[in-house]
Length: 149
Ligand code: IDP
Ligand code: MG
Image (cartoon, rainbow, N blue to C red; front, side, top):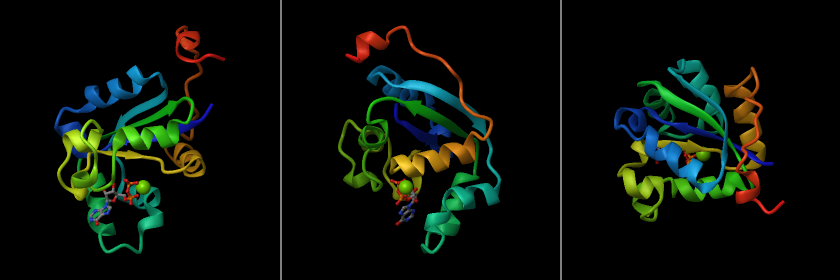
């Protein structure tokens, strides 16, 4: 099954949104496969956002991500990359629909609470970067109640 990398950014941690965010993925029917609460080094944040290094906001973005601890997670499930992005909502919170994480909890693009992989391929890269030691092995007993097959 598909996996995605989700990170609660420092503002999400500081604002007490960890439980709400985890609940949304959990209740949907996705499986938590990895989770770490950690501070990241500047060079690591730069690596995570390497694709955006030419953007004018890159330096500020890196400072934002290293401004406090983050919750790094891997979630697994059917179409979890795309559906996870829909649960998160649009990058710019003023464009994020109410009911999405950013629609409900964020105002500014530079304080938008959460990261989610934007493709299966990038998800794989991000999971390898953040969880080099691998992921937890388990299968939920609820599986047949969530998935037909
Ligand atoms: P995403 O997080 O929805 O995938 P990306 O375009 O990959 O959005 O940008 C990564 C992050 O960079 C955003 O979540 C946001 O925190 C920040 N960012 C994006 N655009 C801007 C901007 O115009 N100004 C400041 N920060 C931005
Ligand atoms: Mg992105």
